[in-house]
Length: 77
Ligand SMILES: [Zn+2]
Image (cartoon, rainbow, N blue to C red):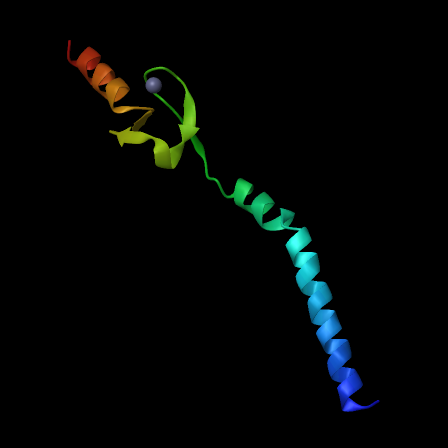
């Protein structure tokens, strides 16, 4: 087989692989969804939210600064 024909075949294969990758972007997103991390529950209102979005204090999690403050006020009264 002439070298030129081989190079053309390789070029075609590369183009096909590139096009396939462009039209099937599903896999990386599916993996990312699984890696989103664990959910934690707000100790004040009970809503579930991703741990990175929660405010942690003394081993408990809160959905917002307001609920952290509310819970702290209640425990001191
Ligand atoms: Zn809350």
